[in-house]
Length: 423
Image 1 (cartoon, rainbow, N blue to C red):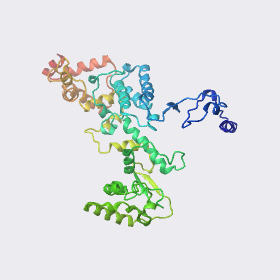
Image 2: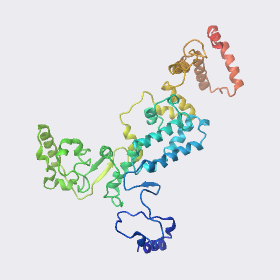
Image 3: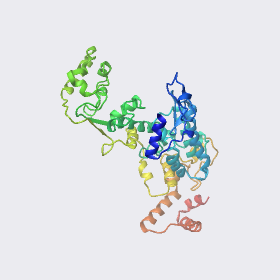
Image 4: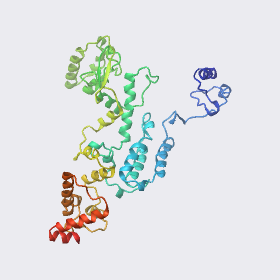
């Protein structure tokens, strides 16, 4: 019968099922003669785990051996790239566009375990700072957690896989509302309690007939869910998954709340009672709105960025990355404003032998602030750049012009500064 269905589908669509390349994975087929049943198909009968549409499937929890191919796929990309020949800005572009994109398909369905995220983060971190799969702590100039923050919060914009996975999983809850005809609606979506809490905080439910909105778990009461406003009453409630329409009818929502024992619980009950009495249902269906977009629709980008609300940075990272300059210059500036350049003071802190005095002026200790701003040579360069900008003078283009310019500027410096600089 199943073969006839597949043949009818092939004649109608032109998509013919190749049974030779197919396999059957029985589920709850104890006591059945599978060989007799599968005889018309002429395909092997296998058991779980398996891979379907690129995703590992198992009747139990996905094992480490099932996730390892995904990590190996990320690692194989590094061996094909000449990472040491790329600057850090180029490596950053490859991390964001390739390495981070590889596990995205997996993250839309499964919650990646902590050990797997650490493995992938290690590969991404090592490639960023060293250009290879191996790097030690001395090569990493900035903490990885800070590098994964958005650029406006002082990071590099590298996606945090754990937070990105949570943002992707919210689409399951969103589609439950907006696309109720999807075949998986009605089953338990792959989300956690934290995912649901973030979804409640990110949505506003407008009541219509009250048939879709959950009384306790939907954000229909002044933009919040009753379970978040009155958590003590939610614990006492008997029915926690009923709709607003079902609970408002005959005041069914008060079932179980008679177990109140404290004055605070009784006061919260009175507040909730007054709010429920204001509910006016109509014949329109319930609707939902996403808070973080202008059109009120869910996007994974907004769901990811909202998880950084409350973060701050002591410098404006967006102004660095929006500047009209090359990527390597932006990356250098990003390190500079955090004082993460390997100047002499940083090398001495790592117990690396070096000359602590600035090699340009030979007067003060070499630090990031001195080398970029306070050094006489640096001040001269910035003054000259200001003149070039104001007068639109063409700056030196090659080595010979730079030498001539340097000799000319040295002649104009005070004698003491000129001697120390030449030294």
